[in-house]
Length: 312
Image (cartoon, rainbow, N blue to C red; front, side, top):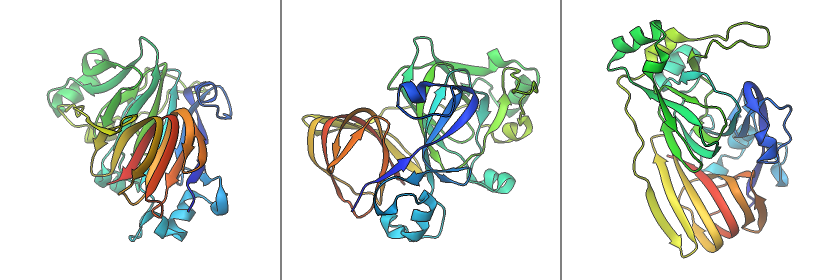
């Protein structure tokens, strides 16, 4: 059985840059490319299989046509999405709804997500949470545009990890490159955008009423201690986050990992650094693939950092 490599698709954004090309070797459409959807079956942007007998098929087609590859016995949509985001400038301050609110208002899934910091400048910051004590104080501070008082700015560096549950105010800051794992959803409510204007000179749309309806108050910081496991003398695995939707970890291989046994139905893998071989396939930084259910063991050689995601 083959590993299923995926061809990324790109989204140009007002805040995007060129690091998806310079850092990851992708063929981007412009120097304002903000997102690479590297594993996605969402109808706003689907990735396709690039290798083997399924080459050219959209991920949703594979999910529906060959459910055995994912041990999928339930009729539903592919539940996960992985992106690489290049923030050359600040992203809007935003929040994502939970499943119930998103399905009722947008006919989409909620958006629980998390961030692994791939790279950042010395002064990079993110917005992560708020300082309001309750929903009424939150509403007052938003209406009075007391952004410096309301928003929490957090310094970031390469290798940091942040869980971003639904209802969390957040924003990626300038000069930050991240890998984002999330539910398969494209629902975002902007609450503040620095009075930024689009290419036509118009203020960008905000969604303050919906945002205020879903922001959790007070903010609860879910960052915690990570579970660190020694795979063998040369390899290690860190469990960053395990929630009701997915489990995310980082596997670092330095040399040979003769056998990695898998117990999950399928595994999403992003190569975020290094190069090597996995089950005979040559892989390098920027590759993204799915390990289907029929593959229960991985043999890895090289010097690689992999972000792995499995469905919970």
